[in-house]
Length: 282
Image (spheres, rainbow, N blue to C red):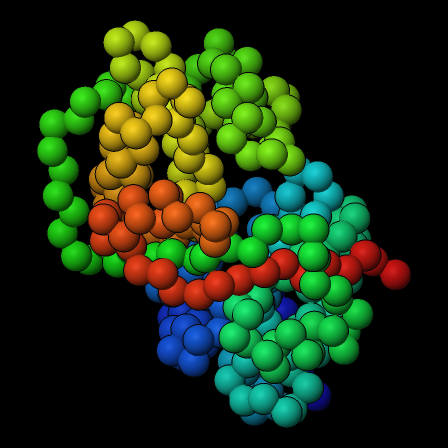
């Protein structure tokens, strides 16, 4: 019988190796691929990381979740060393139980469309594909390759409390379903960079360093097609390299060809098409 326990620093190297193996098999990427990624992720509020050991005490699986601000538990994995032994089920049971105990109102999985076995397993466990959610392209930039930074045509600064009304308005206009309210934006301002042009707001970048992901990027309608989006992407790459990240990811709606083209120009590779699966506790 598998033993599921909290991940500790001694697990990071082997957990990262399992992630790399999963990536090579075209499974959905986890938010880490190196021990350094896991060290950063372990400090993020709301994140729980787990491992499963087999009967010999060897690390046989990894997984985890992040509890979102709206009560959704975003599940990662589980990824197992060997399938067919029930270790993935043990991990998933523990992940769901811990998330529910922490107040999760829903469980959310992100799966590659090509991962048919993962989709069948999720359906067997009661997950339904969220047909109302967008289908995304998951794009990745390897930061071990050089990033060419030129003199930008915009100025950058950290977001301030006074930016909240403009942030909410721009995000709600750029993303049809809206995103966060002012109170929620206030909680992530330390991760947001403002781009200004001529003293006016031109766009913003929300970079989540711990998971190596561009969470949101938006440009004011009047400033589009003037290179602002390109500079925001380059700023994200520069910041990520400065933080020592090995890769930077971004999810883009698959019909957003303009953003996908911009990312290709910045060296991102279109890795996988992904969709969301959801289940309610109980």
